[in-house]
Length: 167
Figure 1 (tube, rainbow, N blue to C red):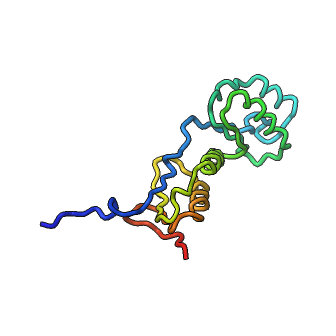
Figure 2: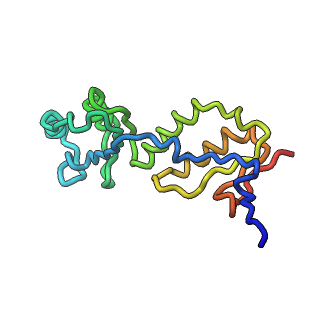
Figure 3: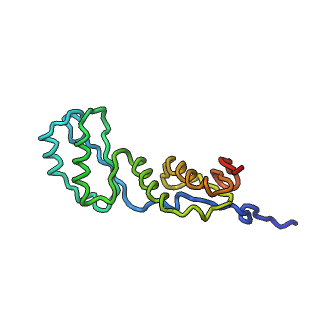
């Protein structure tokens, strides 16, 4: 019987796994419509009173996304005021959803990686993830890899989709 050889393990492929860079920490989302009259109308005095009485310490060392789940039209200062209340407690604050928050975290992390270690290598951006890696992170990873990698694929070594090959 012939020996089974794992060609994937013996290949020169480099796997770039975004899950390895997933920032640890709790994520929270604040829906500011909770402080609007019937979820739609911002009454400044009431809004400020709600913010004053809110327990901001519950967001200590958390990543926080501020959004509005309703179609309310409200001034930009409302979100900024919420962010100012959060600032002494939260690790990071963004306007948007949890996915926007994760995208922002990945933007920061990926911009600090030395991608030159992938120079002239075949790289697979690992596609399957147990953590919620946003699509924006995959796009950024490809963007940073492209100037260095000989080729870029997406997925798993056994079923990778080719994305880029240097000419």
